[in-house]
Image 1 (cartoon, rainbow, N blue to C red):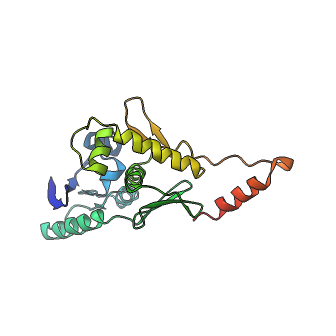
Image 2 (spheres, one colour):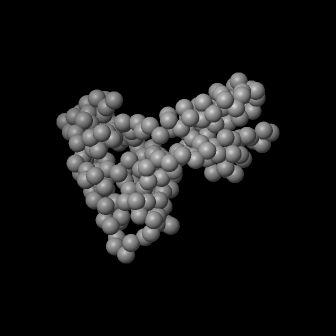
Image 3 (cartoon, rainbow, N blue to C red):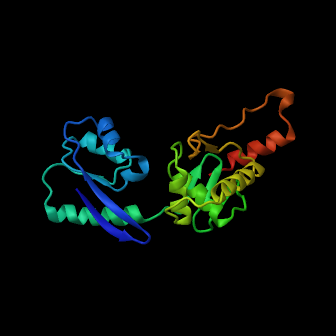
Length: 214
């Protein structure tokens, strides 16, 4: 059961899920409910309070026990849609802080200097870190193209993005997978701290910057 509403170039969908006795992991697999989609989902007839709390922690938009009226469900669906459509201003991933209003990325408080398309690519990948995003998805979400152009604009922008991140001290964050999709690594590892005489001035400065990160 779903409710479709127009929202600019794309459509927003509020999904009412009913897992019943189906294990949640299996239901998620069948529904294709990745973390980016869960915020649109309202789970119905979840009787156990602990299970409703678990679903909310997993990122679902809402979870209800049996018994609410259609009027209440409608009000909750409308509220869920409104909340799900609102975008966060910031996304923080490892050492990088993304600012949607400024359309810029910051490392240790310093701007990376991203082009708007480069920022849009990084913002989209940061929506689902650790998950593959196909070239077709990126072309639609960033360029609003429903077809693959003959130019290699996507690859060029990804290459420039990687170069700017590397210059800012962040390397290996954007991966290209064997099928041509892209992925933001799920977790960035910080460099190991040196010990004794190996701890240079540069190392101390780097430690200070990392500790100053929000």
